[in-house]
Image (tube, rainbow, N blue to C red; front, top):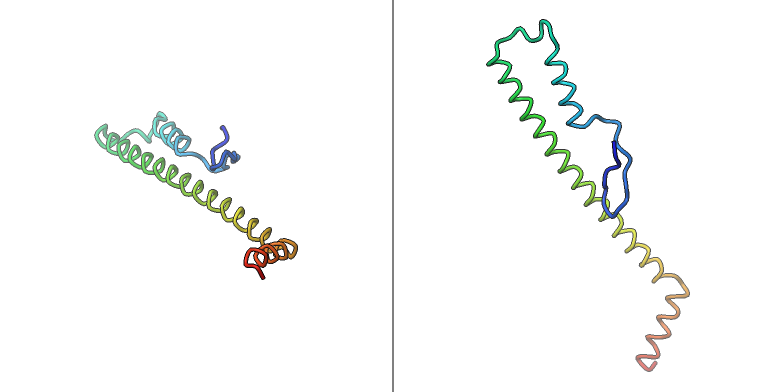
Length: 109
């Protein structure tokens, strides 16, 4: 499995949870096993296969939405870290003193 994108070019290691494709493949493999599991009628099998396809499509959609949400949360966290860093730099005692002196000079005080 390859690394997944989490936003801002930072790779994320793959999750230990199975993907929708892996789940789908496992269910189809089990479903197509010879024996008693396939003793139902063909029309009923087609109905289950259609339901499985629908569920797989839903899971894939939810996975895509979750990735988008993770990307957005990551971007927001990066932005907030940058803003906090900027605020810390601007409120350091030395920087405050320089800014106050500059303001006083500009106002002619």
